[in-house]
Image (cartoon, rainbow, N blue to C red; front, side, top):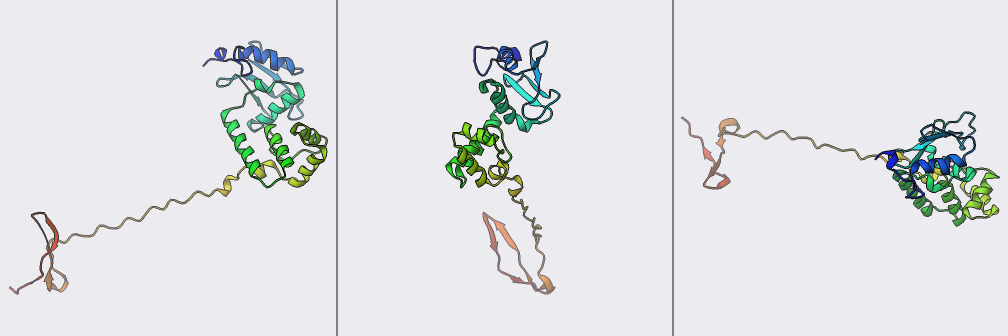
Length: 229
């Protein structure tokens, strides 16, 4: 599907190009829009950026996508949250992918199953939604995070003490190295049993043969003694 056919995720009647210009570019200070109106470049709010490294553009599979050349693709949720908190860019204008949404849902379920106090869980869930994967921030950012999560100042500090500096990655994201794939064992092939064609038994004592006739298979005939010539 061409970019011109995509509509904004915030308004199905609004073209994605206008959403990028009106809702995103207009809200970010000192952002520069391209001549064709398909992308804008600005300083990334997720780190100290002296040279604009964040590009927000029309996507092929999504109305609007974004990428910071310094933070990388793993910081997309964090950048999205910072654009909303610092500049007021509506979250509906910056849709997350299905993969990101599925991973976030899995993390939230892991938080609910963790042995943490309810306030700590609320703070962790809010932090994960804002793209935080490391340890909880220090004050005053911790207090602001707690306010957005709906917990008090004291509860926010108690949550930070409960996590004891552990990262959210370590707490809720499963370590792939811990999952050992089972070793597939291939059974050894047995050598085929040689078929005897009327050969005599060792030492020439007896000759045992199988007779297959009239559907009576597998019946062993009586041993007969070999007469001397």
